[in-house]
Picture (cartoon, rainbow over the protein chains, first blue to last red):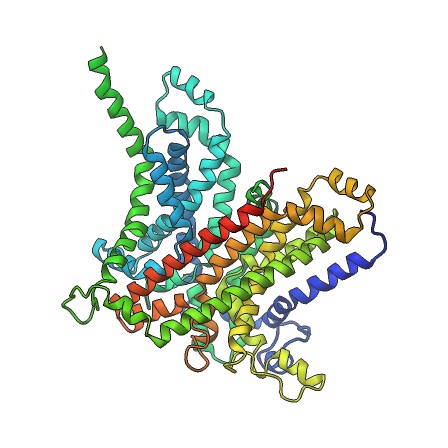
Length: 274
Length: 299
């Protein structure tokens, strides 16, 4: 492996630049005047303007702020609940010697493949029956149920690598199961917890179909359904649409750039081991 | 003593299950397992929330599906889309991973560039590409500038729309393949490649005879993930084409299931479609896993 010369880095930069072009156009249009977006969409935004962003932030119906609040509440509560419930369920599956473990694991495995589209109609029926349809609570509960298999598999795999002797000696000291789990095991699971929080955080933040169906029309929007509703209203005002998308994506992008090492580690932990 | 102890052990085991597994399993059962059972049940009825009473109709819905033009078209559309989305990011992702398989800040930064679309919402990606591929959008403006008189209507021409959709999905999923292949490449022991080099193998043969077989687990993960992603494509269709242009030229199974359920309110038929969809996904993933796993070797 001793290729020298500038060939490889130049080619790599060129390919990445082509790949990035669509995002450059989107980004440039956030800072461009409306008429220029249609006339010269690919040009640099010179002079740049903040009008589009200000327009979105000061909309009289506060679409951005309401959507942002809903997305933060739904994503935050969903991932905290998912971490707690899937860590405990994962611990049970990794440690229990009950015959049910295999059956439960298999049932959860199926859940990894099931697309939400296939179950949404009956989910709506279940939610109507339990009175959580068109509420944020309903959306959070569905997120927990739908994404729990992913959390469980990350945690179960990780817990198997934690020596069980730690838990046995704590049990001899008289600690009960909950104390052992929360005080001794859970703090050791930080890499798994990070993976679960990161991946589920991004997925739930970006979810479109579930909030669209479960929150329904007029019951508040998340950032994704907010953007979707706004493309109908703005029609030609692409400046505002691009600004709204930029502001809605910013939190996730910052999150990704800050944690990209963990992102890659989480993705490739399984890939290199197979 | 023994008599005294047994019930307490059973109690402790039940307590362990209820405390640790209970809450998670309850929510999972309520919002995933029970709905699947309800779907299976509805698929045998003429259920329509606005047109009671609901009657048992046996397998009539399933029989109907196999003569239903819209559903058969959606199977064809989804199959084409799946082939595009499984092949393109796999091939391009492998090429880019080989290109980026070097140490240093530049290559790390470029890897992140390819990963960005993965963390973007499908709605954002869809709107950006709808703009780009608009008849009067930047891509067609550029084509006209270089002398193409009548550039295609990427999203408005029924002959192009499905392939444009496939390209957009491939662009968004490419980063996943790049990252997984890169990890695979960087996990290959340097000694193996050096040994092959000493035996006189050039870069091409080193890749085909050493690296590629060892990338089998990465190929398995990418193929299965891409397949499942392609199979449930809904968001992009809803935002970009709404199933059009024309009669369902881009209407995927997922899109048709939801339209039948929530717009046409034909709950029984939609449930039968959902059951068929679940069956296909399960079967296709199982076959793909089996075939691909066979190629994997232990290092």
